[in-house]
Image 1 (spheres, rainbow, N blue to C red):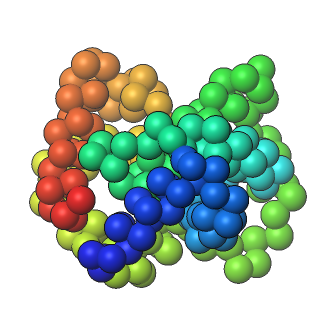
Image 2 (spheres, one colour):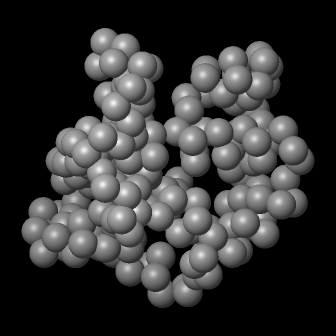
Length: 184
C-alpha cells in the first residue's frame, strides 16, 4: 500500500464532506466494485447487493462530514457501512434470506471472483494475509467470519460456541493487531 493512496482517499472523503460531487463520483468509481463484492458476499443476491450498495452510498454522501481519519481508513469506514447495511437488510427481509433458496439466481457467474480471492491477489491483500497469519487462531477465525463471511458478532458467537463478549474481544484485539501490522 503506498503512502499517498490513503492520504488521497482521506482528502477525497473531506471533499465529499464539503459537498464536492466530483469527489463523490470518483469515490464511487474507485470503491464501488469492492463494496459491491462485500454486499454480494453477504446477501448472495445481485439485486439485494445493488440496493444495499445504493443505500450505502447515499449514507456516505450524508455522513461524509462525520468521517474521522484517526479512527479508520476510508475503505474500512466504507466497508463497515456496507457490511452493516447488508446485515440490516438480511434482518429486515422477514427471514427470506435465511432460506437462501434462490442464491445467485440472477447472476450468471461469468467473471465473478470471490472477494477474498481478489483481495489475496492484490499487494494490499498479500500484506493483510501475512498479518492474518500472525493472529491466534481464535482471533483470525473471528475476523474471517465477521468480515469475509459477513456474520454479525452474535452469529460468530453462536457459530464458534463462545460467549459474545469473548468474540467481541477477539475481534477488537485482532483489528488492533491488523491495524498496526498493515500500517494504518
